[in-house]
Length: 169
Image 1 (tube, rainbow, N blue to C red):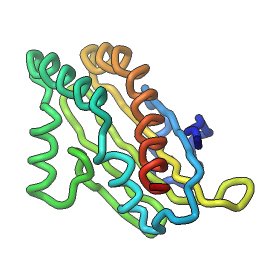
Image 2: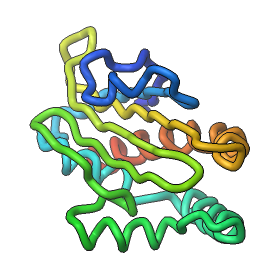
Image 3: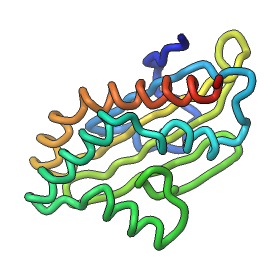
Image 4: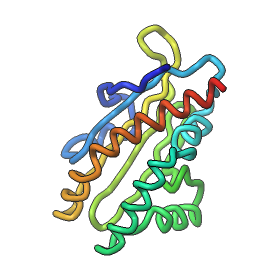
């Protein structure tokens, strides 16, 4: 099975200017099968719209807990984003080029951006790279981020691996 792996933050990403001072920066990559699409939006949807059951449960728990402190639920973020344009999962699409798609949302506790890039790897094969940048605004944001960061990394890897398995089927 193809595994997602941690990689350096992409220097060519449109998010690169946001790296400075970020409270969370991470990037993961996975090799794509030959039959995978070349459309970055199709790839992003494959990676982030078909969540495993345990990820849906964690998102539900996050929403229930965070709504008690006034943080917007994932459903509300998705509905507000959909009123303005396309969303992937529940995150609004902020920009798209042929090789990179950016999703994200801002809330009172933090600003979140993720990018999905299609690029060639060291062996000149195609790979999908997802990078995350988070800037916290206050103590709530820092506590929230410290709590979810380990889950975030597991979820991103699991999403990439699940998407590649589905592309091979």
